[in-house]
Length: 73
Image (cartoon, rainbow, N blue to C red; front, side):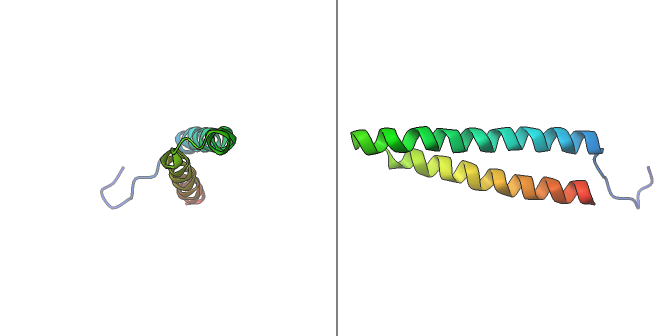
């Protein structure tokens, strides 16, 4: 590898990371789907928990977009 060429990860590594981020994002969506009915039924005052799920989903989608860009490059 020469000094002028940029580092490019192997496609297998990017695909593996893409799969892991996808599964994590799905887990945050499921956690939110389970948490909404519980919080509505109990008024537990734990809306921060749903905000945490939303942040997890948003960052997961950002990670998916980033990794897809790496895959195309």
